[in-house]
Length: 234
Image (tube, rainbow, N blue to C red; front, side):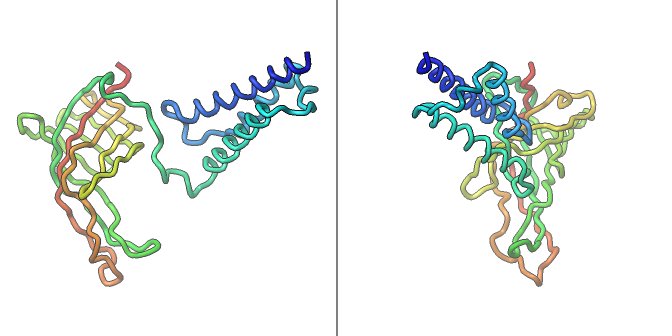
């Protein structure tokens, strides 16, 4: 009887581990997830189910493995979430399938990436903002792309977001997945929640020329890219 109950407890703990890991890595997760609190709630559930006495038993290998995995997930992820140095330093992982999301618009962007010479750990060119014109497939000007990053069309609609996925490309600026955090107007971009940047050409920051003598200097590096605007709620 004790062996069966201990096995049930181990299975329950394993399920907690699985649920936490699934929650962490599936879909769009909140910016701050209090995993120690989740752990506390789950363990409280075990107590309310009258399994508290079983926690004093000699644990089996499966029980130890699951508890170890649970604590590692809770403590490391909780620390990362609470640490100010990590906040916003890495893009969130989002579930996005271009094959199923509704493509609202695809535009060709052409312009410049503006960099400013600044010093952090060392002198380097830091991205200030893009400044580009958006064209449709026929080559007609339909809007602008500028700081935010923001995309605004001539119909008055716009979308602004934050990069949540970055795919580095050799010799050019990276491809991006941008999650919208605000929209405006009543045009084509009013319901867009994902912007994808692909097929980039140029735009990379210079590797030299930024030092104390050039503090605050700006450079404008030509680039082009394809911007695809999606509505994942359709």
